[in-house]
Every structure is written in structure tokens, then in C-alpha cells.
Length: 256
Length: 251
Image 1: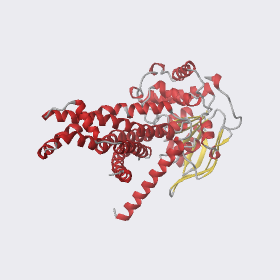
Image 2 (image 1 turned 90 degrees about the horizontal axis):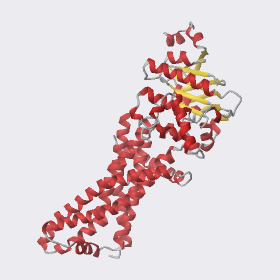
Image 3 (image 1 turned 45 degrees about the vertical axis):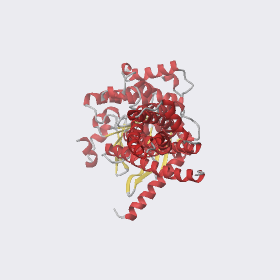
Image 4 (image 1 turned 30 degrees about the vertical axis):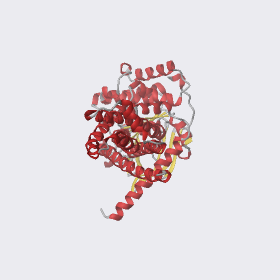
């Protein structure tokens, strides 16, 4: 496909996503609030993702430490390892990796679920039974996805730091309290607050794109597969774009 | 369930005038007219892609026609806002071709869903009783705590029918109720449609090209061709027609 039609398609899709987000704000802010469905989605999206986030977080911390340790030892600054790992995990790697895993699991699951509901006319059935499917299915999932990712990221970061502690102790011996004291010594509010705030935006992006793709999926099983796949791809790209913007904004407020 | 019934309108339950609907350059409905009388079963007969499903989706507000009028139980459907349309929809049942049962919910939750949306002042005991009555009507009371995936196609169709009936609608729209079912199950569904219609005094539009279903359920048959009502009459009248376009459906 030539460049101009592709660009037109991209702009059209961006406009549609923006309109979908606007519709979410309008519909989601008005009663009736679907509290029961929202809590159910928090359980599905948050609680059921914890195992995966914990496992990947632990491995991430462990591997990061095992990669950095020989390098820092060769320069004789291995005492800086906890602080370095702490900054890397809390500021950048933790939120971004957790969000990418979240996009893979939750973005695809929302896209596939809503897509198959559309294909099997379940969304139409909901509408004819007098329920606003956008409010019931989309708004609840977007809000739950937005609120659950920060929680998962905080837990994932903690487990990741524990993985780093285990990694340090594979070659040397460092006490638990000493490791965490050193890890947090170099961290300030300017590191922690933006990294938490941006995860709300990551979560919103995952929920929004998953819902948008599923709700507007094509006909048939191919359409459902495509919805799930593109939901993950677009959400992942958005996570990096939001991260880039977050870094720029954070640097405006940074004293260093 | 009869005790909940409130007949809200005395005129013809469905009146459609000059309905037009196109998708791009393709005209699906072209000044289509139809009136459905009280407690009447009207079967819309037509080929695949003739616009039968589009017609009933326009009636219930899932699709918006390009022009024309749709009056359901005295309400001009096209002029209603979302909340008003939802109120009218509680009086209209819609049986989807693919059943559209919520596959993440049990049969009980599927049937409770419309009740909880509209009759949220009802107690759990009342809701349980209504769910059980709806399932007993379709002879599937034992499936109440099963998941949809555990049921056969015919059973799913009957559950969908029970869900359609649970709000005690005055008008029911059936989208190909027997498509994909074996002849015995299809006959059972035909029987259930008639049984429920007699029990609850509903008026119906049945979309079908299954001639056995048409014969069993129709008070009147409307043939939809080229977006218009080509002809109408009883099954017997159309069966004995000499018109080639009509005859092809009965051969």
C-alpha cells in the first residue's frame, strides 16, 4: 500500500480511537454505574494477572542483577548495585515490562472476549434487553484495567526487587535490610510518583485499545483473532509512546 | 407469568410504513410496508440476503433505517431517545439466529440478566420463581445451573426462547428460529413458539426460509423480494400460487 492511503488509514483509526475514548468519558461518567461488573473485572484483570506479573517480575530482577553484577565488580562499584537496580526497576523497567505483559494478557483477552461477543450477537442481545453494552462491557473493563495496573506494578516492583536481592546473594552475601535500604536510598518522590502515575495511563491505554478493537471487530473468527492481535500491538506501541512523554514531562520537574 | 401482563396498546402491535434501508449502493429495503395484528404470527419469507434480518433489527432499533416509519405498540421507534427505546424494548422479545446466550454466564444468570436490569425491585425469590417458570415453559428446568457450553444446539435455542419470553413481551421477533436444527428439534421449537404465543397472547414476526417452520407457525406469510413485500397470504394460498417467483419457495 502506498504511503498516503496508509497515513489516511492511521489518522482515521486514531480519530476513531479518540472518539471511542470520548464516548467512554461521556457514558462512563453517567449513572447507572455497573459496580458488580466492575468488581468482577477487577478480579479478572487484577487478581488473575498477579501470578504472571509476580513470576516475570522476580525473573526480571534476578536477571538484571546477574547481568549487572560482573560489570560493576570489574569496576569495583558493586556496592552501588542495589541502588542501580532499584532506580532501574522502580523508574523504568518495572512499570514498562509489567505494562507490556499486561497488554499481552489483558489487551488480547478483552479484545477477544468482546470480539467473540460481537460475532455471536451477545452485544446485540444485551442492547435489546435494555442494557447499554458500552456501559456494561466497555466502561467497566477500561476503568478496571486503568486501576489494576498501578496495583500490579507496585507489587511487581516489590517482587522484582526481591528477585534482585536473591540475584545479589547468589555470588555475594548482602543482608535483606541493607539491600533494600541501599535500593531506596537513591530514590526520591520524583522517581516514584511519575512511575506510578504513568501506569494509570498505561492501564487506560490497554483497556481502551482492547475494548475498542473487540467492540469494533470484524465478522467471523478471523475478525476476533485480528482484534485480539491488533489490540496487543497497538497497546504495546502506545505504552512506549506514553512512556516517552512521561519521561519528557518528568524531566521538566527534575532538579538534576 | 400472565399476572405480570399489562396490555398497553389496543391497535396493531407493529405498523411499518415505507421503510427504506441501504448499505452503500445496495438497497435492502425499498418502501417496505407491513402491519402485524394482535396475536398474529407473520412469517417473513425470503432468500438469503433479502433483508429479512435487517427488517427486524430496524424494528428493535439495532439498525437505523434511511427513511420510513416504524410503530411498535403505539411508539414511533425512530423518534425515541435511548431510554425511551429501552422501555419499549422490554415489551419486545428478540430471538437471535445464533441464540446469543451469554457464554460466560450460567443458564440461571442468563435468564436473570434482563430481569435484574428492568425489575430490580423484585426480590430474589420472585426472580427465582420467574426464571424457573421460564425454564419450565421450555422443559429445561434441570439445566438451570449448567453453562451454555454444556447444552446441545436445540437446548440452547430453547434457553434463548425462555430468555426472550422472561420479560413477558407483547411482541416477539424471531430471527430464523429453526435454522441449523435437525427436523425433530425444529418441530419442537415450532411447537414451543405456538404454545407460548397461545399462553401469553403475543404477536410475532418470524423470519424464516425453513418451509416446515413457515407452515407450522404462520397465520400469514409475507414474501420479501427485492426489498418490497412481493405478496402475502396464508401458507395454503401461497403454496398454490401459479407465480414462478412464489412457487420456487414451495418446490
